[in-house]
Image (cartoon, rainbow, N blue to C red):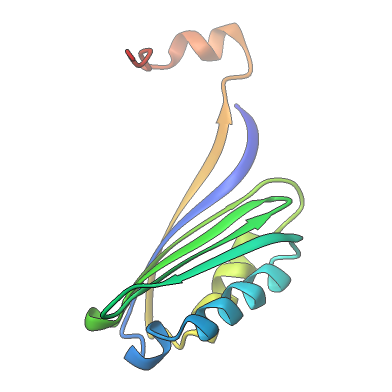
Length: 130
């Protein structure tokens, strides 16, 4: 496979409610994650929902970090996709620390495409009808 990046899909729980409902704390956590991952921040968007919850995205030169919070459950879901030389694992650990998550589950996915005809022939993928 021609690897183009690493994608971490994160579930975190037992997170303090007040942190998950604070858009500035979420912004800070994404910035800390970006720095820890050795990435370059291009843009950030943070939105607070009513009555609670925050969604934020950091657009990176190396791809993106996104987080969605559910304060009522003490839970957040995050998505970290890095290509190039960044370190998504370090970014994820910084986010976990910044938001004081007691538990995390991380799914690690190598992203890319088949590199040879033989490799493509072994894939069980079908085109998506639009």
